[in-house]
Length: 136
Image (cartoon, rainbow, N blue to C red; front, top):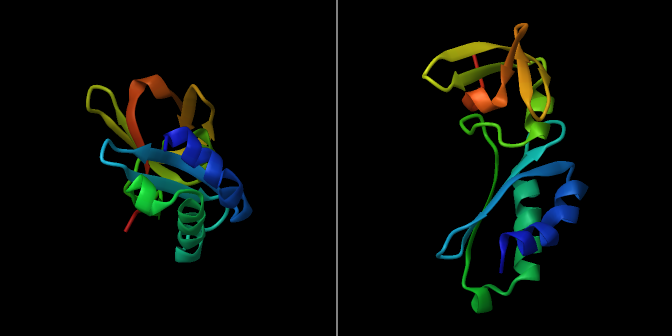
């Protein structure tokens, strides 16, 4: 089974749960990781369980011999897709720039090429990663 086959198998179920795919990876050992995020609110165990069930119905684990993990993007993972940036508009983010500099601020806008944080336009090609930032 390929990454594309997995995406095709779960796309409808992910959308039905009000979620979107962030990442699907398949290791050489057939360890599958599906990362989802909710359009509004947070991913819960029922969302993950529903996607897990779809994969197990689409692919026979005894034949394919795979291990499966379905989880949310979480606060410790960098943004991967534009929809994550768009969902985070108005929230605090931490931007790690190439060269080691770090910027913290409110995400004001996002496109495929750049983000705006506290009025500063930052090209995504100039970043190493962008994460949600939680102040304590």
